[in-house]
Image 1 (spheres, helix red, strand yellow):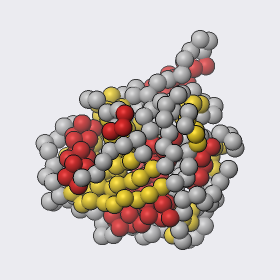
Image 2 (image 1 turned 180 degrees about the vertical axis):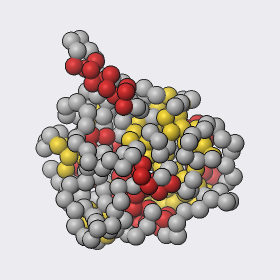
Image 3 (image 1 turned 120 degrees about the vertical axis):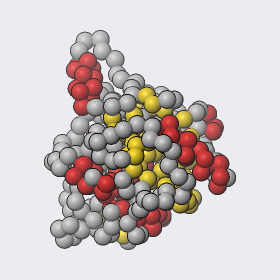
Image 4 (image 1 turned 120 degrees about the horizontal axis):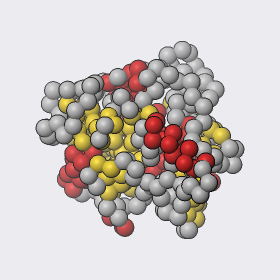
Length: 316
C-alpha cells in the first residue's frame, strides 16, 4: 500500500526520484498522532483497469520483514451497526486457509518469499490465532468525512485495538498482526485522507522492539462499493470485497512491517504496485475468482515480484 497517501504526493515523489541527487522516500509520510500509515489501498472510484504502479522494483531499506506471521482478527460491531451475516466467518475462513496452505507456491502469499532482511528470507508460514467480536460503544467522532456519519481517527482505532489485545491477553510482537474490521457505515480519516474517498485500508505499527504493535485498519469495503469493491464475490458475501484489501495489507505487513524494509523508489510496497490488478479469472460473472486457497475460492489482487518484474498470482 502507498506510503504517500494521496496521488498528488505520489506524483511529486516520482518526479523527485527521477531528478538528479534525489533520495528515496521514507515511511510515515502522513502521520496521525504517533501512527505511520502504510499500505494505502486507493479507492478506485469505479476504475478497476490498473497497471503496475510506482517506480522500478522493490528495494531493501534495512528494516525487518516477518519470517513467519501470526494473525488475529477483531470485528468491531457496536450496538446499532451491522456486518452481513457470515462476514466474519468468511474472513476467518480466509485467514485459516492462508495458514493451511503455508509453504505452497500456488497463491499470492508465496511471492513474498523472495524478500529478506539480515536474518534471512520471508517464509510463507502463516497462522491464524483467533478472532474477537468487539461490541464496545464508539467514541465521539474524531474526524469527519463525506461518506459516513461516524468517523474514527487512527489514534482512536489504535486505542481500541490495544484495549482488545489487553482484554484478550494477546501479545504484540514483530511477527504478530492485528486486523481491525469495522462495521458497515463506520468511517475513518487521517488528516484529509478518509476511508472510501481516498483509501480502502492501510497497515501501520506503534511502538518498537519486541512489543511493537502491528495492525491494519480494515473498513467495511461495501459501505461504498463503487470505491472499494471490484465486483466479484466468489463466497457470495460482502466479505469478499474486504478480503481483497486484507490480502493487500497482510502481504505488505509481511514484507514491510515498519515502513523500512521493501518498497520502491516512489514509496510503493508490493501490494501497492499491483492494487486493483487481478489477472486471469475463473468462474461466473459476479462470482469470479483467481485464487484457490485450501480448496476455497477468492478474488485477490496480484502481488509484485521483483524476480518477474511484474504482478503475479502465485509462485516465483
